[in-house]
Amino acid sequence: MIAITFDIDWAPDAVIEDTLRILDEQNVSATFFATHDTPVLKDLRNHEIAIHPDFRGGDYEQKVSDLLAVYPDAVGARSHAYYLNSQIAKHYGAIGLQYESSLEMIGVQGVRPFRHWLGFVRIPVFWEDDINAAMEGDWDLPRMDSDSKSLYVFDFHPVHVYLNTESLDRYERARKYYHQPEELKSCAAPETIPGTRTLLKQLVKYCSESNNHSRLSEVVDVFANSRNCS
Image (tube, rainbow, N blue to C red):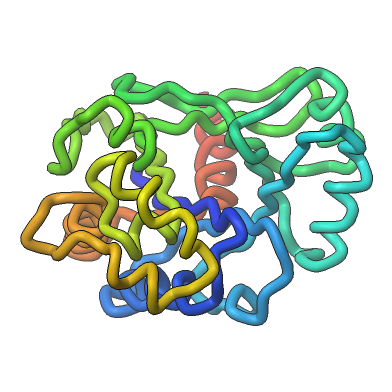
C-alpha cells in the first residue's frame, strides 16, 4: 500500500496548486498536512486534510486547537520537524485523533502501522524529499517490496516539488523567495534534472496505473480491518 503525503509548511497558494495539478491530472489521492488557513485546501474532493502543527515554543494544546478550528474534519496529525513528546501524544489521545505520522523509518522495508497505547494509530514515513536531498540519494523510485501488507508513506513538500529540489543547496539559494512564487520558479531545476518533482511524477504515474494510492485515514481503516480479521 502506498500513501502520498505533503507537509504544506506555509507554502503560498500558487505552490500548493502546482502540486495539486500533478495529482489531479492522474486522479491520484493524497493527504495534506496543513500549517495554516488557505482556501486552496478547502473542499478538496480527492484528498484528505490533516494538521501539521509547529510546536516550537510549546503551547501544544492551543496550536492543535487553532488548526482544528480551521480544518474541523481533520482526523490525523504530523508535527513540524516530526516533533512528538508524551504530552502531545496524550493530547492526541484525549481529543480522539485517529492517526499520527511523525515517525521516520526511512528506507525500511516491511513497515506497518501500529496502535499507540493512547489509542491513535502511528503511521511511519518511508521516504521524504528533504531527507533524500540531505543523504544525496538518487531520484528514482525507491525499492518497494511486493508484500501486500507493507506500507510505503512518501512525504513531500510542495516547495520542493515546485523547485524540483535535487540538493539542499538549491533550496537554500531559493529560500529567500519562499513566498514569491515567480522568483521561486526562476530558481527551480528543469525537469531534465532528476529531483523531487520528477520523482513525484514517477510515483503518481505508478500509483495511477497500479490503482495503488491511499489517504492515511484509509490506511487506518485497512489496519483496523486486518487486525479484526487476524
